[in-house]
Amino acid sequence: MWIIGLVLVALGAAGFLVAQSTRKRRHAMIAAETLPIAELEEHRRVLADLGTVGGFRKVCEVVGTAHPHPDGPLRAPQSGTECVWYRQTVVHEFSEWHRESDGEWERRERSETVLDDTSRQGYALVDASGTIGVDPDGVAPDRPEKIHERFEPGPPGPGGFGGAVRSFFGHDGESLGMRYTEWVIRPGQPLYVLGEVHDRIGPLVIGRPESSSDPFIISTRSEQELRDAAAGRQRWFAWGGTALAVTGLVLTVADLVT
Image (tube, rainbow, N blue to C red; front, side, top):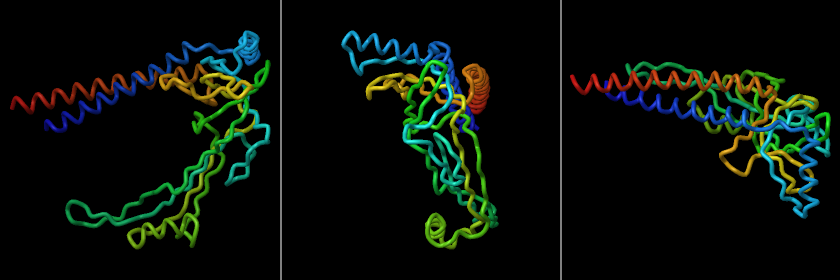
């Protein structure tokens, strides 16, 4: 019983850590200024006039709509949808035999991600006053649009993903099929971005802050929606963590004194 108690205490501590992380993220949104792009350009110009070129840094929020890279929009690989960012996954679904504790064999369905690919190309954010580059740096945006999901039943074919999966699983599993899914950010999608604006490459770009303690958020939700969601998540993990920790301590103490 004391082992279960210690596990619950550990889960409670993990809940507290998540609550604190969420609280920090929410407070970062509250503290950061939301600035128009033209104002950021003016700050950079003043700094350049003083002789500091490429040294502008400002952690802030920028709100606007997504705009393609100068090289043109991307095409989502599975659907061909025009976008500024995409993510695609390919998941192999299969069943395999599993031996239970009583010695009986049971067939269970499982899945294995074969591909999880995200676009790396930057794009732009446009507001009423100007344009700024966005360097996603591999960060997936919050709540992208899910535009495609397709399940192809049957065993994987030779070569490609299917051949690799069949080679890996051999005769231990029976293939059920492959699930293809895709998410995108389309041109014109309203975005909220919290990050660090800089001019290291010349034009203004907002990207991941140099300080690892500062969050980097790209979201299709508004700041208020994100803050409300963070407040709810913080409360849930704080109260849940407290309940688990207290229960764990009670079980541990009860087991030790009996």
